[in-house]
Amino acid sequence: MKKSRILLFILFIALSITLPGCASLYGSYFMKDPLTAEEHNNLGVIYEREGKHELALREYKRASAIDGELVTPIVNTGNVYLKLGKYKKAVKYYKKALKKDPANIEAANNLASAYIETGENLEEGLSYLLAATKLQEPVPAYALDTVGVLYLKTGDRGKARKYLTEACKSASGSEELKEEIKSHLAELGEYEGCESEK
Picture 1: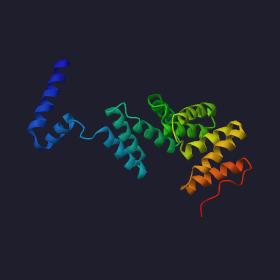
Picture 2 (picture 1 turned 90 degrees about the vertical axis):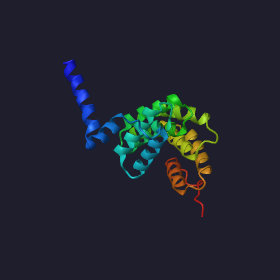
Picture 3 (picture 1 turned 180 degrees about the horizontal axis):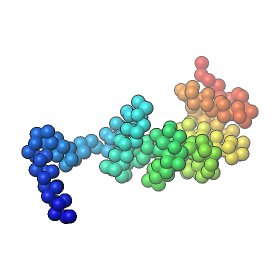
Picture 4 (picture 1 turned 90 degrees about the horizontal axis):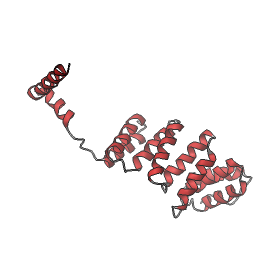
């Protein structure tokens, strides 16, 4: 059995070297990946923007396989799963990213967003996001908004108001985000204090 496998492998190598059509097969089989981890990640971003989610996932996972220390492709993998509504898989990747980098505000925010979508583990999401915001200065408006929503969902209206108002103040230049924050403030009965820029 072992002899037949060895002979088959030798035959494969001999044919791939001698036959012109198979030379590329030999080269691709034994060649090192020409792209760096960052390049695979960037390619994944392009695929994701084009809506080619499976190709994006493939590139993000290749990037992680090449350089296991990179956090960005792990977060990006979670982002694709979040877009696809595969919340458990998204959570898995966000937690993996946060284990490597607890200050990664995007991973913490999107983990919390996945929990908001499912209505589960809101306290855990709040814990991760608050930990990341303590390590980030200044805290992005989108993260403050998510903290506010988490407090709103867990019943702490006072803290929800505080974070949503702060989010609105720091959301200058993003009318879309301001509109979202205004809708969350409206859930609290607040209809002023987050005016759009004219």
